[in-house]
Image (cartoon, rainbow, N blue to C red; front, side, top):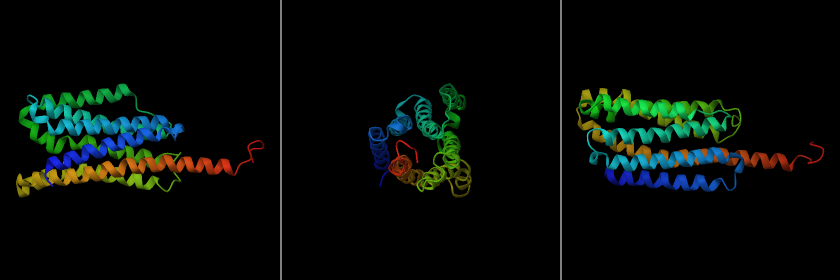
Length: 228
């Protein structure tokens, strides 16, 4: 498959994930806030991928910077949903500050470092955010005993490790094998992105559904009046 087809698949799967997650709010009202945040996250990731396809139509580094910022917004919202699931949250002011700092770093680097930022440096904050989301889900008290939790943690952790590889290992591979390895890494990244776009929403929805089933099971085994 060519890169454009892979980008299109990634955008499509993230739009489907957003619609599916938003629809789940009708049947899992107790987790409506988390589901809403995650659906917005998938829309942001889809918008970031759309910008990535058209990034070269913007002047200078503007397209690259905007793409990176919008994609990072999506990942930060995934983290936010995980935090809300655990009864916490990241202040949106802090989130906006991080995004503004990321955009400023792009423009400070300028055209001379555009390739390095796009291929390597921009992967670092994505890796750290996904790693933080995996850690939050792993430590979350509300989901600690759910069978679906390890799957969601593994998906986010693997995505974090993959992007850590782009940030730390890919520059070494480029130095050893030359710039042609970047094209291979780009295609591998897109394959991984499609898998992640399917696995992440599915595993997060599995947690919400398992929690709802457990609540219904507890209600069916408990006397409404006596609480026994």
